[in-house]
Length: 192
Image (cartoon, rainbow, N blue to C red; front, side, top):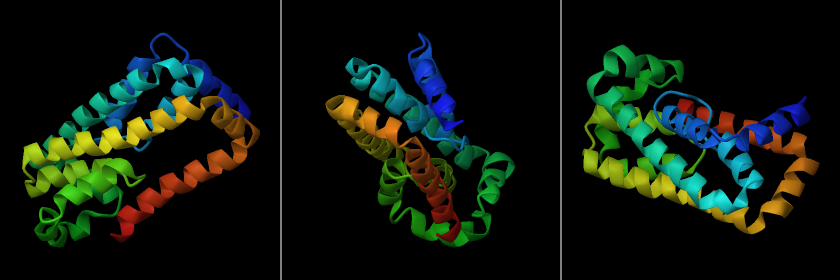
């Protein structure tokens, strides 16, 4: 089953509209969607290493724009949209306490969530809700997402074939690690 899912993802990565699909996933992941863009970005770069930098740029731009939507949700629609999203992640109860501390460390929160598997959408919504300066939010989002996407792109561009062989030989292990990282990010949200 994993092999056919992997093969399907590789075929999708080679599709002429794959960049648009990546842009959509990166955009919605930054504001409300739970699956990170790496799910498409990595196979796209493995399928076409020569496009690694373009793929990373598309993910970066779409992710930052999606982050701005998350910021707007927090700033303008927190009670009707943002709060239910955060409640679904178990974080609504800690908002008042978090609000007072967040802007003091907001740069580091956005940077950390933008680079790590921590759900970035939580930070984008909280940034808008707490009133983090929009310029700080955008600049930090660009820095964080550029680091994340371009490091991945650089590693895959430079070591693509050995990495692809490693992934294909250990597909079950790679899938398990991905799921652990994804759930680890959500658990981090729950306990912060």
